[in-house]
Structure formats: structure tokens, C-alpha cells
Image (cartoon, rainbow, N blue to C red; front, side):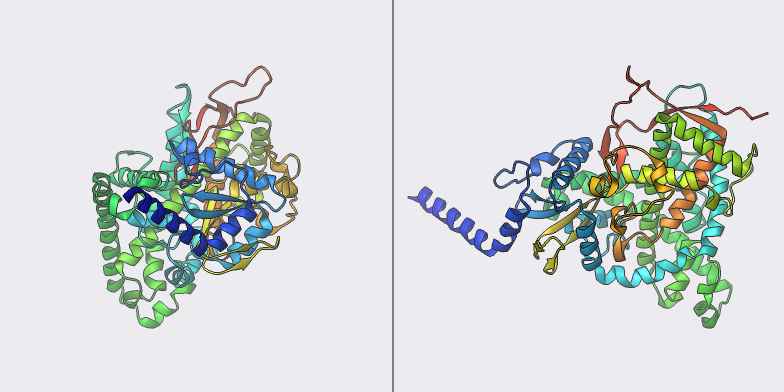
Length: 508
């Protein structure tokens, strides 16, 4: 009798859930995933495993959306429904009308706090207004001198590996971007390229890895479970070390600014001057002593460190890896560099960068095929009608699958899977949302110009000095195996971006 009663209660609960979520189930039926769905777990089985399996899961659901005429599909993460989007028109409507990030990004806040990338809308909106002036052309021009100086150290460190066989180039590029962002963000010389044992680097990597680990292990999603595990205590120890370090830099900067005896009027007009670090900008532009608290500044600096270090490092590493596989494209880049720099080893200047049009095309084509952030998530907080006629409903999530969107043949042609930088030399996008390596809409990345300047400076310095060679030989058909990709908060090469380098001889 007891068993029958329990069974009856369970059935009644399922009926109630089905009724209260009828709009959500109706949407799921309209989206009609072509991937097998299991009761209770939905599609979670696709995501169980390591971070290579996780990236494959994003590929699978993205390809399923590409097969549909409207570029939409569904993903059931347990009983939570995501709308998978691989169509620019749908993405445009969503990202212009829905700004709230999906709840899954809250896992990053344990480590980073409520920095702008991950913050709820009420926090993000006013902070973005402060961030935008920080990326003024005057500031970017100054930052370019730091990129140029650090890129010289990069080629010196890479030079030590010549003749040693394949190297994991990401290790060197991420050290370059970390040194660059530490200086531009906090005026701190970390010397990561010379010293890879810096505690900030170790704590930074550990924290990001913990965020990813929690995302792809659903049993860690519960705060009650996660915050009672030893791994959470370890994460908090690393977080405290990093936050205490940045807090000390903030206090030193505040004291330095007080000693300059700046008047309130000078602070109000300071947006017209060059602020030589993001830290100084955050203090001044938010209102000085009446502006952001120290903790709020730490949150924004942590976001800048994440975005400025890993994003640019991954993008540059993918460019280098692809150039090793496409020597004819690498030679075109080198010829352009010869036209701009000749045989000179001089530092790359801000004025050189606009002339590097083919290099920029290579970077953009790489970002199209290997976008560092392959997905963008949103939480549906209001009904939204998409151009195709499907209505999104509250209580569901959205996953813009940029990896699939950038391969949509309706917008990129039948050669959408091919690496062809020339398409960006005279590109006429069929839809502005067809290319979004830095996201799209009101919450797009405010630092995209900063990233492009850093990438072009590093690559122009490196490719003038060295020829990039593949770590492995192609098969008998002169083809390389597909890259093994992993999701590690960003999309990366699972084999560590292995390449070989050799010095370029000077032209007579």
C-alpha cells in the first residue's frame, strides 16, 4: 500500500510539473532537438567527461541547430531547457533584448566576484559606463607601447627554444598577455615571461580551472554541496591571496592620488586625460573616494585580467597554430610585414597597425573558426518573439553557439569550414551578427580594440623573427588531422598549441 501511495504521489508531482511548465515543454517540442533525450537527465550525458568531451558536446548541439532551417534547437540540462541558437537573425534579436546572463555564469563569481562580464544587469549597466572611457584611443596608443616592449621579451624567450623540437606556444603567449595586462591594468611588472612561478599566475590558473570544473560537473552545481567540499576551501585560499594582492595595489594608488592633491574639478575633467592604468581610471572615473569601493575595483580588475590574459593568449595561439599548417598564408603575412617594416627589428608602433590589413584578416578568420568563447548564455526573463515565429518563454535559458553560428553556410558560403583569410579583406556581412568573436549587442566586449592591438603587436613582432612550423607532419594527402579542442572556460587546443619555430634569415 505504501509503495502504491508513493508511486501515486510521484505521478501527481510529474503531472503538476508538466502543467506548470507547459509553456516550456511546448517550446521544447517546437525546437525539436534531433539529439536523443533521456528522461530526467535530458542531454546531460553529452557533457559528462573531461573538457574535450565538453567541447564535443557544444559541437554536437551546435551542428543540430545548423541542420534546422531556423538555426534553432533545444538542449535539456536535466529539466532546464536551453534554446540553442546558430542563426544570426535570432541571435541579434536575443542579444539586443535580453541582457541577463544565465545562472550558470554565477559559478565564476565565487572566484571573480561581480565583475562586469558576469554581473547581474543592475550591477553591469552602471559599471559599463565607467569602463568605456578607459578604452579611449589615447589610452590604447599608450598601451601599445607596453605591448611592443613585452612582445620583444616574448621573441627572446621563444628564441631559447629554437632547436628543441615542438613547444607548447600557449605557455609563452599567455605569459606575454599576463605581463601586458598587469602593466596596463595595475602598473605592476609581473615578469611572468621571465618567472613562471609567480604566485599570482598559479592562483589565477587554479581559480579558472575550478570554475570550469564546476560548470561541467552538474553534481557540483548545488552551493550546499560545493561549499562544503575541500576544493571550495582551496579555491577561497587562492582567491584571498589574489584579492589581498590587488587590494594592496589599490590602496597604494589611492594614497598616491591623495598626495597629488587633485581637486574635485580636476577629477571631473580627468576623463579627457590619459589614465595610464585601468586601476587609476576605475578610481577616477567612478568618482574618486566617493566612487567604487576597493572590493568593486578588485572585481573589475579580475575581469580585466581574465579577459585580457586568456582571451588574447588563446586567439594568438590559434593564429600561430593555423599558420604552421598553412605556410602559404604565413608567407603572405610575412610579405606584408616586410612591406611595413623591411628587415628592421624595430618595435611595432601604434601607427604601424592599420597597415597590417592581411594580418588582421588572418586574425579575424581564425576567430571565426576558433572563437575563444564558443558560447554566450542568457536567461529568458520575459517573453520574446524571434523572427522565425518561435516565442521564448521565461524560466528557460539561451545558448548562442558561436562556434556553429560562425560556420553557418547560409551566411558564410559552402566553404564555411575552410580557413580562408581573404574573405575578410573585402567582407560584406550578410548580417552584422554573423560574426561575433567579442559577443554582440549591449553586453559585447568593450575591450575588443585593446585585444586586437595586443594581438597584432605580438604577432607582427614574432612573425618577423621566426618561421612557424607544424609540430607534426601532414598525412599522405598533405592534410593535417582536425584540431582536438577542449573547453577550459574558453575554447583551446587540447594538445597545448604545439608548434616548432626556426629563425628567419635576413633578406639580402
